[in-house]
Image (cartoon, rainbow, N blue to C red):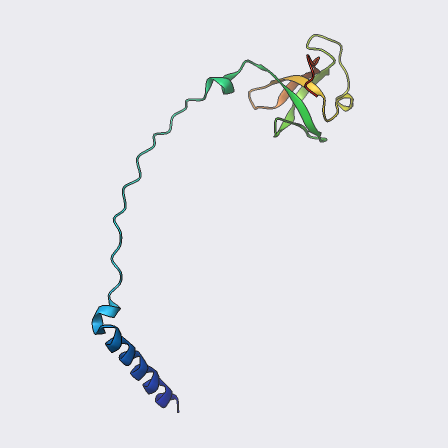
Length: 126
């Protein structure tokens, strides 16, 4: 019975190929030519805006035990991070900072916060 089904299927396939033009139907379609992708050179160049000074500013978006989220980046704390009311002001607790506070901060070479302070807001930014 199995050989009968296989024979019927083979006969149907041969009939379809004959109706479609024989062996030409078995040839794969031709591939379209593809233009080569241009070479993109990678360099160490960083836009000037990203090379801002050591002091940065932004709103705290989230407060976590291990970091502040500022400008959509979770910034961890350096081992001896300082939390201040002003850049040269008295020390305060990390718990004094809340989401929505506008702060200034300085990063160490490992890109962790080594100092953070409250910044006054000029105008209606909130």
